[in-house]
Image 1: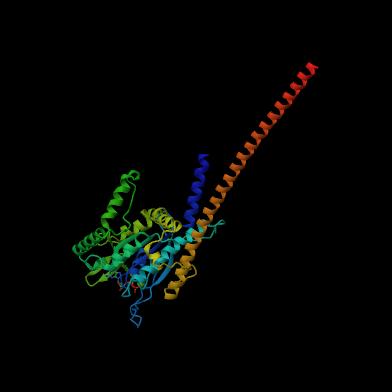
Image 2: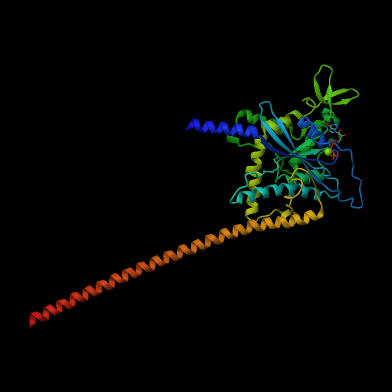
Length: 404
Ligand SMILES: Nc1nc2c(ncn2[C@@H]2O[C@H](COP(=O)(O)OP(=O)(O)OP(=O)(O)O)[C@@H](O)[C@H]2O)c(=O)[nH]1
Ligand SMILES: [Mg+2]
């Protein structure tokens, strides 16, 4: 028996290896914060074009459209494990004077992925080709200012933290001196603590963690916010060794140099050590919370305000192209959101009515049983009375016969 289980576990593992692990990473940060360069550095290839275009303010200058762009890259680690890495880039994020619209686009996309799972779970016949599009991690790129967080950073993490694993990252770490970087990290962390921002803080269960994992998680916590250096160029240092680096008048720096940034640690954390932790946390904690809220009819304040929009099903994002957010989408989306919400509520109501019907039926059966039992007792009583009467009559007859 054990060997069968082992064999099937091995088979599943092989299948998983072949199919690859699916992981979705969203990269958020204002224009020019280094999102595209980071993605290319993370994947070791040119996944995203580094755009040089800038958006000039138009008469709608307070509302610059945010796009969500999805790219899929297949990566393979040293042990041959394939990772299907879906990357969602957010060009145009935070470029408006009022960024709440950008936040809504991002949070609606994340919510929509949860809604899709909820619907799929409730289907009688599951779709075998269903694609789980939940975002497992959202890297929030912060420009290296040497200061703490900006108001918009605080708002973003506060809004998105309860929905997705947000990890703050200082980009372009080479623009700060080591002392400035240290201070920048300290100030950001102080703000995160002060505002109780719900970032992904490498959580673990005290009773169920090995010493080694405990050490790792505590170490990673001490690094937050991670600092990264990115580059789109690869250089030959002369000895045949190729490095991805940045060339300066005074020399070339290697983005993988751990004394300069946390890039390598972050890459290993995302793609190797914490890939499953991030996926599990998304499924078991974040999605579960969302699911409970959705099914109990509880809505976040944002949903109550009618800002939520979840109609991304037919949007090009779902099919791997780009998606332009527009007001009409928002309207359609909120209609769809309330339609989805209505479906859940209708289903809940249906179950409740079914239960009520069953209870009433059971009560009726019980009552009928009671009546039948009483009828039976009455019949028995009647029978006894008839028997007694017959006996009495027979006795009287006998007595009168004796007298004659
Ligand atoms: N010094 C330094 N510059 C960087 C780093 N990463 C990116 N840059 C530069 O910053 C500029 C913007 O980088 P992108 O990667 O295009 O930034 P983005 O966030 O994708 O920008 P948009 O897509 O235009 O919003 C480019 O000139 C990059 O070369 C870094 O780690 N250090
Ligand atoms: Mg870009």
